[in-house]
Image (cartoon, rainbow, N blue to C red; front, side):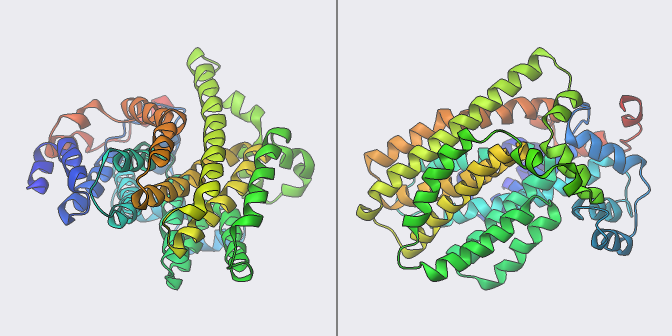
Length: 411
């Protein structure tokens, strides 16, 4: 029934499927709607990542897969996701909407698989607080992040396979973890960190929390003391003269480049201020939640894997707190860590439905979910055609056929 409804009212079918998220039809509709969301990008916002992706896909002469892999080995490119998807998609279409439909499909698939982990672990009756936690979890890396597909797709892939590897003990999932740096090079650091964390668990499996908790406290306060972009100031430009890595390093760590690549409009200033506030709020709330969890951890129902998950959360926030100061792009690690914290809070509340955990859930709303909910609504309006929210599937597909030449004048 929901699949039929998707043809006539895709958005309503998507919302209806969220009520029965674990069913096969709901899974299909969820992933298909994410693909449709990508297809409905207008590419009118020239400062958005999606516009640059679309423009270079439409006008570029794309390499064969063998050349891309060779270029990657030689250090000419930092990751292979974008050139590979350009190359494959260009074999049958040069329409950027088709490219972003593929991006939306991949994003939706791993987003669904990650949310399903939480849904399948739910025990007992569903209630408002579990629903709020699921909304928080989704909003941290929502569908609008198809706009910056590389990092945020890598985030879902990393979350899903790390959970399978460390929490569910599926050793083959290490392959999926190693895949994430190929999607976005920033995950090279995180993957190496996770491998070290696995070694740490072997040596400190009896009590893995104590040392990590001390490191968590130190790194939190150190993140406010360290000057921004310390890596760039310390290493210097000469240490990163490595073709593509040099370009990426400068783009993601140089604050002056950020200021010159965007106009200095009132909106930009307000958005930067709001983003900075949300970053501090997210760090502060994560610190408070982990303190509460650590103090009460000995008195709650929990499995051995929940202990491992809490250790992972502490370890990831150590990395996130420090990287948020050492480089500007490190702020994204903070949201990646919050995914695991939301998962941990879901697990704890799922088995211990007490007032303290309800307060923790409610306290997370203004500090995390509110900002990202606003982000979803506002950017959903700016990035995609308004037709998506009320038109039928055949019309939306027809409306995007032949798109591409419109990009040229705007560049």
